[in-house]
Image 1 (cartoon, rainbow, N blue to C red):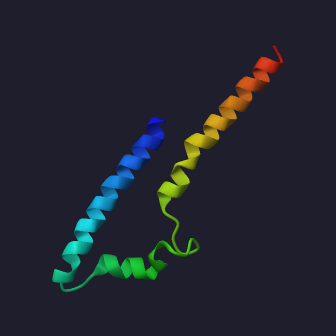
Image 2 (cartoon, helix red, strand yellow; image 1 turned 180 degrees about the vertical axis):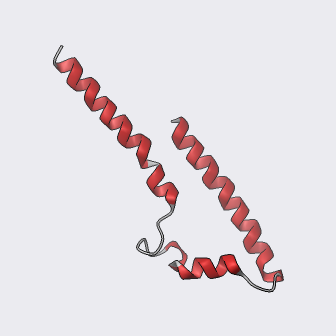
Length: 78
């Protein structure tokens, strides 16, 4: 749970930072962050860009499932 909460906290913080950057970019001579989002298809094509948080939230779930399977196997064989 701690891992997942940490991932969500960092996702929220990064989202806030990018909102600020995208708000300020129109006043700058070049919009590099907007160009980057255009290059990766604005997250609509997972072949171009798959947000790390979508992958990272599954890691603790997978390990939890593996641990539960081991515990159940151990309890069955007692």
